[in-house]
Length: 343
Image 1 (cartoon, one colour):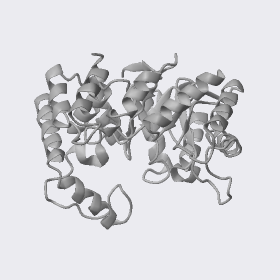
Image 2 (cartoon, one colour):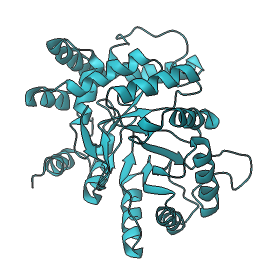
Image 3 (cartoon, one colour):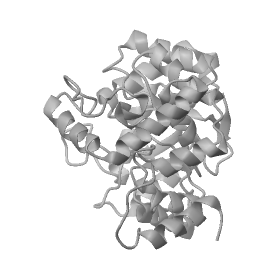
Image 4 (cartoon, helix red, strand yellow):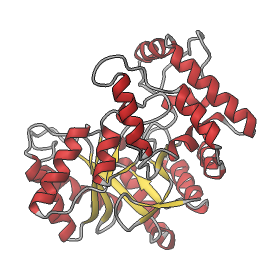
């Protein structure tokens, strides 16, 4: 396993983070415990969950595992999230001081801990003043309930606004941002990645394998059968499959990933994960798993070193399709200079 600092903080985490959205749903408690144990045994130190994952069951499963493994628990950096509804009342969601106070306390109870290392706002709340949210988070840091805080699914301007408001008040600033990011979904490079670079915020990409597309599980023009990871409604999943299948870019990316994987004799997933780990300001890539074998297969990407030529091939093949101002030709050149440190 390899390690990096958590954004601009001094805390060190593994470059692979164990995402636990499957805990309590796709993975029962026994399987989830086995996944946790395997992750730690192979050098993983970073866990990500949320209060809404399996309606709190994910946090509870992690909490019981932490209690049963006190030695291992001391080495782990634990992250959770708050924002979405955990009740039916009007204040049971959002980023207000009132809701976050209740949500954080409830997460701590489920996890069986007195503090979490990273507390993340699960999405932007347009109704709550950002000063109210950031003020609560600074208080939580000072009270020792959280070590750091971060965001998830924020736009570039939202991240930048939060950073500058926090600095203006002398409050703790965010250290991480958790966006969707993979070889097929690179649109965050327009605004979000530059904003994170400017603020010194580390990225924690979710869906690094593009919902399975980057593992080679799909074939061109061959519809999958049954429910998909988009939900239990097969038709909803088919709409998404049809849209991606129709894009020539999708198959250009998949074919390139396959070629690179074959040259290293490794699964396609490891190539996709290794490319993502190499991207600017990425701190740790979130791995979701339903089985131990699936987790270990993906963690093998830690030992995969892609050449500069292979990284370039993957980056070129997956270049976002952008035609309009301001993200056209001039924008592409400007983003390239920003991401590579040039002028």
